[in-house]
Image 1 (cartoon, one colour):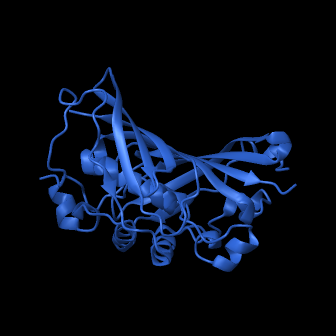
Image 2 (cartoon, each protein chain N blue to C red):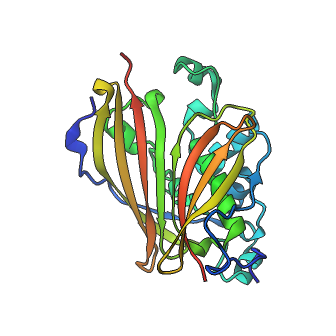
Length: 140
Length: 148
């Protein structure tokens, strides 16, 4: 049994449908330290305030790939991961420490071959867009 | 300016294992709520051979090098000036715990904007498993902010 409970099918989705939004806990310095270790991205700009300041930043900031992982959770909470054919994003703005990220998505196109194109976004608690992405999923 | 002769250059392949413990740590660090990403039994019940690597995990696998910033350092780019501009993935066969993955990365383009104030490097990475199956690819765009 899949842990994705509702089966989303090509016939059941319509252009304009919204994916159930997924919010995450506020990004703390611990979040970034754990993500650095787990992801292998040890770039000090995300975990070492001295390095960040020397690079001209006011503080450490979140890894873009942490937010992209959050966007991935949005997709795989909606369809099984094996349905996802393509997934991409632009990193639009830096995500500051303490940000509360919410991921949203909507169906923008239904294509031949049971393919559904999505637009996805990660925004912070002020509604500022941090990541603007796309995905292509193949539905039963 | 980044040496444009790097365009088309491939880097030595990386062969790396996909560890269940690493996948669990990644799930924990990213607020994952779906147990298939940390529990082998749940993953198998969902039809996977073992815990699947999440959608962005190839990026993490490629960091399993002696120098995770290999292409940045080889191109003599200052890490402090680097931002991640874009990231794209395509997917083939799922990657699961226990797999051995071969990653081959190639510079597909280098260009600049704003009179050289910003340079862009596009690196494409292709992934195969131990059976030679295509796992998909990823393309990253890094932005280098050159000081005036």
